[in-house]
Length: 127
Image 1 (tube, rainbow, N blue to C red):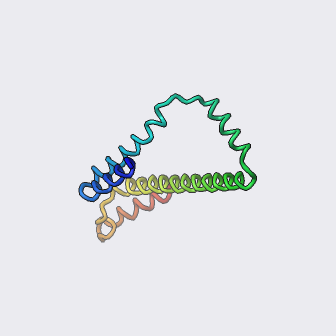
Image 2 (image 1 turned 90 degrees about the vertical axis):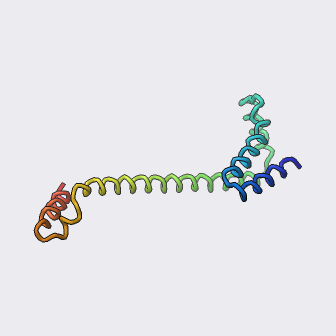
Image 3 (image 1 turned 135 degrees about the vertical axis):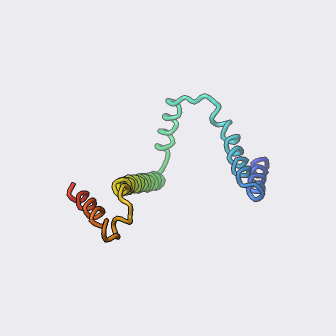
């Protein structure tokens, strides 16, 4: 009953003050997980328990676990690819903006000064 009160309290706060509501909800999650995290954990014991649980599973359950793990692996790889594409795209955009920044746009369209902008762009293309 206490957990549902915290979630309700957080959602009510989110309507009146969104920042406070998010903080209250996050604090409720942290408080709920503090009992699990605060205890000392023996890694060897946890791994042996995991091994016995996996050995007790049937073929269908293991296949489902494998498929879930494979889907998560593909999703993580797709997200990392998207992050790299976005990062490289932004670096390219910054490079292009910085390389063209010294030229005022008026030098591109002005008849008398137009050759300055055109020559600068031609030099950039040759590099």
